[in-house]
Image 1 (cartoon, rainbow, N blue to C red):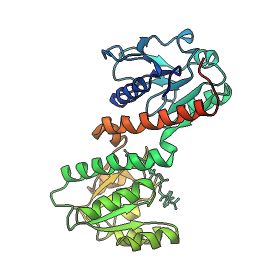
Image 2: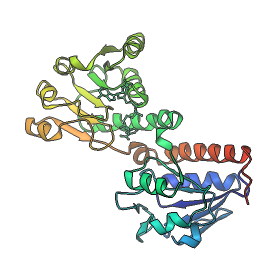
Image 3: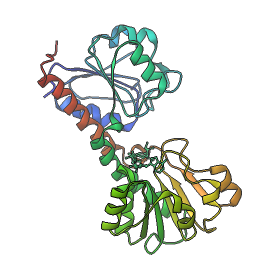
Amino acid sequence: MLTGIRVTIIGGDARQLEVIRRLSELDATVQMIGFDNWECRLSGVRKAELTPAAVAASDAILLPAVGTDDAGRIESVFSASSLVFTEELAASLSADVQIFTGMAKPYLRDLCKRHSLALTELFDRDDVAILNSIPTAEGAVMIAVQNTDFTIHGSRSLVLGFGRTGFTMARVLQGLGARVAVMVRKPEHFARASEMGFHAFYPDSLAEEAMSADLVFNTVPSLVLTAKVIAKLPAHAFVLDLASKPGGTDFRYAEKRGIKAMLAPGLPGIVAPKTAGKIIGETLSQLLSQTLDNGRSPT
Ligand code: NAP
């Protein structure tokens, strides 16, 4: 239980509603900022304005999946008001407040550093990233189906990167009957990919592998689908770049060559906000109850 813990949720999307429900179930005291258009009847939950006085007594603050933009603005789909994480706001927070977000841009990281505030980027955690890879792979399949005129079954699908997202992506494609090739850069990943029935290859063979690809799913967050690689793709190939912005594809060259290529960020929040919210809510409540167990008593 999180009795006595005061959590402030600032901005966000449908995922936050699941988090708020979970925190309310666990008896936390929840204050929502930037939820003007959401009518909430959960116990222990109230609305507030974004002022230093309102956030000062928080034990934890949850920001959206992308904490703030480069100017400190916090996005909220439930409000038209502007929400900004300012210096003044950071200065008003107690020294042992915990700030949570999915991933932080340099603005938020720097602000927290300057004010010695503990910042946790939840999407960095293996447990969150692995669970998020499930809606990501499902969303990727949906987009691939919508953008091709052939089945995934029987297609030759390349998955670039064999980390938390690439691993799930490759397995899901295999389950749909694709012939899956996986680009890895470590021998142990080469061995594991082969053991799982994938065709494994190293980055120096990517251009050659591209020649027979129908679908390409990139999870590598640096430029791997270069003009040289895209030049080898068959004209019907479809590239779905799942890596964080700006992705790992030379989109300019893909367009020039007439290869359909898309960047698809934030799929868990788009295709499965309820599941994605549960993942965040569960992890956040575990982390907050660990804090309680470690002796920080709620005031
Ligand atoms: P991860 O576990 O760190 O996996 C990244 C993979 O890329 C690893 O296999 C890594 O190889 C490989 N890699 C990194 N740099 C490389 C390079 N220069 N050349 C070749 N391979 C390279 O990360 P993840 O959790 O799977 O996430 C992957 C990306 O997807 C991130 O950008 C993440 O933000 C994004 N993502 C997007 C969505 C969405 O909705 N589109 C959802 C979740 C995540 P090693 O293992 O050898 O280091």
